[in-house]
Structures are given as structure tokens and as C-alpha cells.
Image 1 (cartoon, helix red, strand yellow):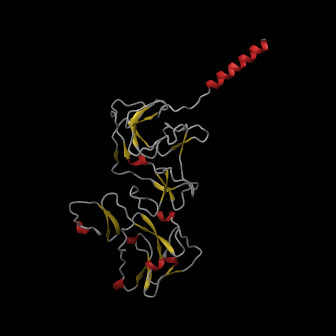
Image 2 (cartoon, one colour):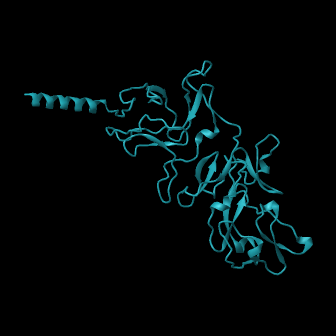
Image 3 (cartoon, one colour):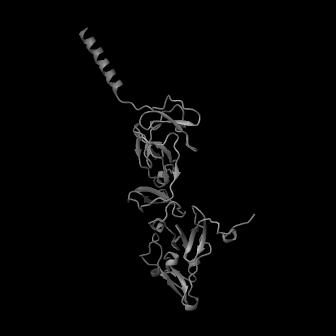
Length: 319
């Protein structure tokens, strides 16, 4: 009998220890919010907040418990439950891997009211209350506005940062970003890194910067009669220079600042020695506010204004 009681006592103790183990549960599991709102629990206290436009459903598979449901990470990080425990990770997509995790910090360009902070749990920024709340904090709901300008600290990523094929990695204010160097970066101005470092052009091509865009260009079309002298030092990532270009008779290789330093075969005749800007220089430029216009120094973004007439804009069609 003594042994039987001891066994029952041991089973009870084991049951109590198992019950006392911390088990992560979604605080929003049993919370029903009004229409247009969603439950979130950044500090394990479930609350209903406005549902931003385009906010994806955190539970695409009803009935399957997601440990990251209701788990809020700081901007630029994402929740992963690698061992069924939610943790915040900085995600960099791998070569050929999924591109579902944005690496650009969307809160870099958001100003939130006093007493709130910007978070982006699914890549979409919105203003969330700080904790504890400040005395003169903005009452609910929280408006947010986009910043006029953002000081950018842009540089190369660490060597172990890997991006999907066709993308390169740069760091913006310490946050790795996988970007397509062939597209204009309206949110990075001025950009402090040569995007041609991220490009890999073909053997008969070289990289040139057009505005804030990197572009692979074929040598024969840009260098009339020019040929490339093969050298072991030619690095397609860094682009060609006059050191590896042989121009046709009557032309000499130059690297004018007005064209971003890219080499061109210019006429050696002083009378006709004029470097021209390509007519299609604006085709790869996306202006955040205004339109692209080719001026003496190259393509530039010009703001819309009352002094601008429609016929001054290239390609403008008056309906």
C-alpha cells in the first residue's frame, strides 16, 4: 500500500510540473474584434486595432495554430517559429529562394505621432502605441504621415548577405536591402553606392549609371566603331574604362563627368568634339514627384509646377 501511494504521489507531482511548463498561446485566440479591426498583442495584452488596407490574414489556414499569430516584431524583422517558439529574425532572401520577406524597412519613411511608434509586422507600416503611453500622446486612432526626406546611410552589405538572383544587397541605415539595380530607387536619394557594383553584365556589355539606375549597355551601340581589348583585369561588375577600349580612327576614349564618368568614343576633331546625352536617358528613371527631363548634365527629376507647360514634357499627349 505504501508503494502504491508513493507511485500515485509521483504521478501527481509529474502532472503538476508538466502543467507548470510555460506554453505559448496566442493571446488573441479567443478575442473577437469589431468589423474593420484586428486583434494584436504586442505586450501579451490583446487589443483591437484598425485593420490597415491590404493587411494580410494572419491565419490563412484556420484550425492550424501558428505560434507567430499575434506576435509583433520590430520593424525590419519577421517572426519565425523554427522550434515552435516565436522569435524575431532579420530575413535576407537566399539565391533562388522565396522573396516573400521584404528586407527594406518600411518604417524608415514614416513619422508617427507622439506616444506611438512605427511597426511593420507584415511589411506594411502603421503607427502603434508606445508602452507605457506618454501623458500627451496622440489619442486613438493614430494618423501617420510620410517624411519629407530621410537621411540615408547607404553602403555595401556584409559578405554573408545573399539575395535572390538578379538582385544585389545594400545596407540602408544598417538594414540590408535586396534590390534590383536595374530599377530606379526613388527612396534612396542621394545614393552613396555605385549600383554597377551589383550588376553582372555580359562579355560584350558594360554597366553605366543613368540617373539613379544601373543599366547594362552593349559596347557597339554606345561606342561607334569601338572594340573592347580583352584584358585579364576586366571586371564586368565594375564596368569598362578607357583602359580597355579601342576607339575607331577619328575617335578618342573619354570619361566625361556629365555622363557619370562612363567612357565614350568621342570625335577627336575639336570642332565636333561634343559629348551628347542619349535621347532615351529618361526611360529607366522613375521620379517620385514630377517627371524626368534630359538637361545638359544628364537626366534629372523635375518637379511639377505652374511654370511647366505640358508641351515641355517629353511624350506628353494633350487629350
